[in-house]
Image (cartoon, helix red, strand yellow):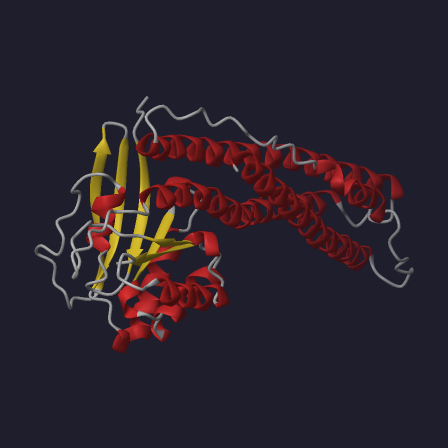
Length: 370
């Protein structure tokens, strides 16, 4: 079994803000040649596979030639690229999104705010890197930039001041590089937040698939079992209700196993990737061992299950003026209508409880990681 862990990083920013220098600094070697051979004005997102060591590969997707006068095009291009990576496979996500802004510019431009806000509103964790933060008398400017970024939903902890290249400034002052360790810790912490933001959508889809499958199996069973001569038999309808409940029990057990497997996959990926990042900070990182107990309780819909068991025997009397076939069809329709109501109620309760559970997971792991 391969021990190689791959991660996907999207880096956004105008030409000249120091994206390549940042990546070379953060990942500890000259992974990207700054500006070499890149078409400065070409619009697009281009990916390079960068091997850190034998166990760690970083796939860098870089936005080249981003320009203010094409802000809407860039916003759509970036959002489409991020959504393309949003899927059930955790390894395919953009685990880190950098948005680079030069502190020398002394402001966050409107088109930059629009792109960042659209990403944040879509549930993505964006790390804003303020490059060139070693300039003279820059602290007041950076504080104003921080306030502007917070207004559009970027957390203060995700705004990092960075100097990627140490140099001698006018007047003889020498600057040292800084911001690497803070950036690596932010990447690691944001990864867990990203997992907690994206898992609810994955779980919602799993719930929909599972409960829809249950509903259609029930409808097939109703079609087969309800006939013109037994459609008024409470005994027969009671058996159908019991069968519907058994089908639901099986689906919920299967759903719980699949959700647990997806959570284990997410946690194991997080632990493996975090370990790689910690090795880049300290030589002997502590083991990550604060796994939240994913004990999602399926019995939250016990009340609904009881309703399913009895709703088919409590149907409104349909009278004696219908033929056997018409009565059968009406009875089937009524059962299916009730079943549809149950499907909606089950899905809603499962999704609501799932979101509550993930919030507990988010807070527990972040507390342990603090």
